Image (cartoon, rainbow, N blue to C red; front, side):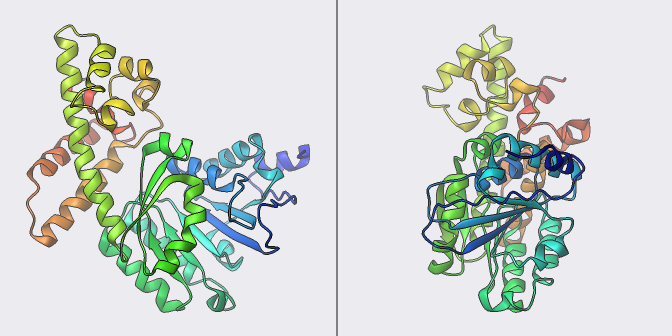
Length: 349
């Protein structure tokens, strides 16, 4: 049991160190994993990654970092509540340099922008101790960023040491998937060996780890997925809005759609109508669109997808229209709300 002194230190934002380790592997070595970025997605992913599992991981030392101290405190509090500190060496880093100097074996990042990924990965890889160059540090970037930036970061990491590596591994499944550890990871790996190395970590946080090709391919697949998802959500919002105006109970409409040809993630898992979401038992709209995938983040992904389309000479008219609508919603002050809030925007609210 954690002492009140340790709990107090967590509240003050200091390090928590719980000395009882997992015994899930016959190996006596300690695997050092660092996680950077404790937002809506990262918070839940980090909690699942740190939990004890009967899997291939050896004894685990888990370090977290977020520039927002409130997120760090929230993570530590939740970790204590679910008993993570009783099975894992758990601590927080005061800054990225301190995190790097601890010579992690793996660094997992969940960040909002290309610029954030570049800053975090660059800071860590350039401050790793020289001894880590021999053993190697493997970066797993679950952020949604441009394929070009993913390739650039891979080259940067490899240039520091050939034993280091960088994998772009963006996710699909939303906050619910992050919470339930049912995410899909789309991975861009430099080798089959690297792909095998990341499996034990990613399978703690998700149900599917999919190889998409070489460096940058995971990010490319994710942008294509989100371009389709954005348009999908707008279509469901329009249908739910029209149905309600025609006097159809939103729950009835959603139930019919979910056993018909309109069935999709936006209708079944993250329905944008609060009444339907409450009936289904899933969806950020049931919580005033809080805690989901932000409209501003979807807008960012659409910008990245359209930038890539321009570079490749591809026309994406529907994605362009989706970007316009999400941009208008963002300008209306809805950027922090789940992107299903498009329903309310289209209804003029």
